[in-house]
Length: 209
Image (cartoon, rainbow, N blue to C red; front, top):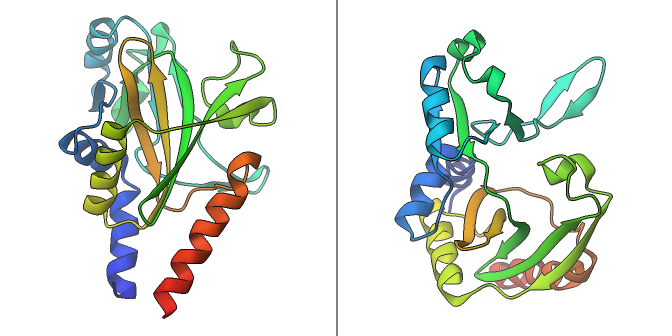
């Protein structure tokens, strides 16, 4: 893949609505999703999925300001009194059903998948695990065969050799795809640090031969 094609693939893969469409096509479960700038439809959507919804950025991005430096936009629950907030009309927003379950970080390297459950010390803490990432424990898990096939199909369609995927294991539904970061962090899970590093090294060595 040329450098131009690689950059194009990365840019496309950062767009979350595109990820969700491709994931669905590849057989992965995804949360019920609404993308809109019409405040009047948000309440209907929220009620249709059980009354609890979250919002997240439309693409993987980093924020920068003079006071706080760089950071990320955390996924957050949308309170009922904000469902009809007129500020929603200013731009498109991504809303999804809130699905309780166990978060999993899955790292894909050249066809290999490495996954670990993430268990926060305080289950009532922020929805976005990044907001309290130092108060968690990890448990390495195997990826079910059907999920593995669908994830590898997703990566092929997104033209990605590496990705860090966020998945949630939902009681009664199984593994639900949330999003993929084509340049995500992977070294923060101690039990997977060495095998992922080895997989990256093996891929780079084989690519140079």
